[in-house]
Length: 302
Image (cartoon, one colour):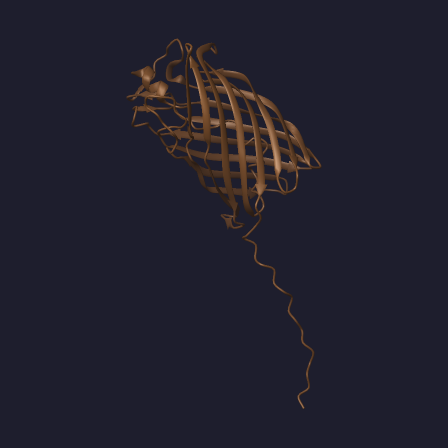
C-alpha cells in the first residue's frame, strides 16, 4: 500500500531553478509579458544516503507564463500577478520496465505579488501563490501533475547596479493531502539564486538552487517509514549549480542555463538544461498621450 501510493505521487510542485536569471525582487516595468520556459530533466532517484535507486526519470516540459504589471501601487509596493501552465512528456525506467506520460502540470496561479524599492539598487518582494490540482494525475499510471493543492508563499531580494544582478528567491510549498491516495507530501522550501553581469545585450554568470523538505511524507496520517529506497519521511534535499547566459534582442530576450546536480537525498538527482524566451507585449495601462493645449489668437469683435 505504501509503495503504491508513493509511486502514484508526483514530485512536490516546487520547480527548482525556474526563476534563474530573473531579478524577481524587483517588479518589471508596467506592461504585459509572456514567456516560454523549456527544460529537459535527466535524473536518477537516490535514497537517504545519496545512493542510486533503480529508477531513471527523463522529463521535457514547456511552461508558458503570462505576467501582468498594471503599474499600480499597493502598500507602497508595485503590484503584479501571473499565471503559468506547464505541459510535459516523461519517460521512466524502473527495474527495466519502461513507462511514460504526456500531460499537464499543476496550474501555477500567483494573484498577489508586491515589490518594494528600498533604494535605487536594492529591491525586495513577496507573494502568495498556489499550485492548483489541475495536473494530469493517474492513480494507476505515470502522472504529470499532483492531485493536491500546494500553497506557495514567496520572498525575494535583488541587488541591481552597474549591470549586476544578485538575486535570491525563497518559495515554500505547503502541501495538502491527496484524497485519492490518502498520501500527504511533506512541506518543502526551495531557494533559487542568481549572480550575473550584463555587458550590453549579453548577460553571463552563475545560478543554482537548493531544496529542502522540512516536513515528512505521510500515508494514512503516519510518517512514511524508512526503506532501502528512502529515509524515514522521504525528506528531499537537492543542490545544483551551473552557468547562465542570455541575449536581449530588443523585441525579445533569450536565456539559457544548466543545473548540474551536486547533492541529492531521497529525490531526483537531476541535471537540467533550460531555455527561456521572454517577450514584452507593451503597456496598455499607460494613459494615452494628450495633445498640447491650443492657444488661439485674440479676435476683435467689430
